[in-house]
Amino acid sequence: EADIYQTPRYLVIGTGKKITLECSQTMGHDKMYWYQQDPGMELHLIHYSYGVNSTEKGDLSSESTVSRIRTEHFPLTLESARPSHTSQYLCASSDSTSPGDEQFFGPGTRLTVL
Amino acid sequence: AQRVTQPEKLLSVFKGAPVELKCNYSYSGSPELFWYVQYSRQRLQLLLRHISRESIKGFTADLNKGETSFHLKKPFAQEEDSAMYYCAGVGSGKFYFGSGTKLNVKP
Image (cartoon, rainbow over all chains, first blue to last red):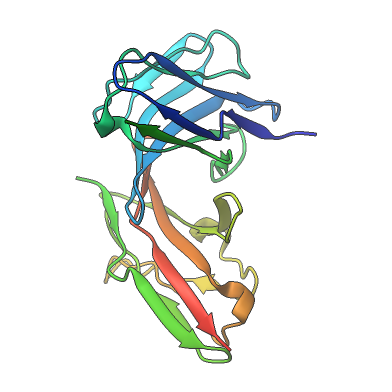
């Protein structure tokens, strides 16, 4: 079934740890995105990709990095987690050939850094 | 800067009452605007987009360039409409989301 997956759904980790948030989609979409969302606040675009080997930073400065080696996979990595990274991270994808560029969202990863 | 503003964090109405969720934008050129919705324990999903001029689940949204607004309206709210609603716009290939409005429809 075509879908977009995020793992883990919840992560509690100590300061200084390296973490990778996984995002995979089986929708055949070329574009993928990472958003950061604090409760009751806007979604902020932190990274996006228009295809394999294409990655760009979004408008919200982030210490995270991403890679796009395969079309369906767009992991986000934090080399050294800090409490300020505590947030919800949403992955999304879209098909650049479809009108309106509708984004499809994953279930999110809620990260807590102690 | 291109952005989307939702002035209300919470909107409570009774079932059957009209509802209007406000969204204002500041974009140059012709904006592409959307409404996304997130029901409890579900993912964020597209509700409607202005280019389609469609009505989804009884909701409509009209782009008003004079007022730079894209308010979401429904004449008779239902309890199942209770959710978080996000206005979003596209500029320079990037999506910009508003801070969201929580709609609570009371029985």
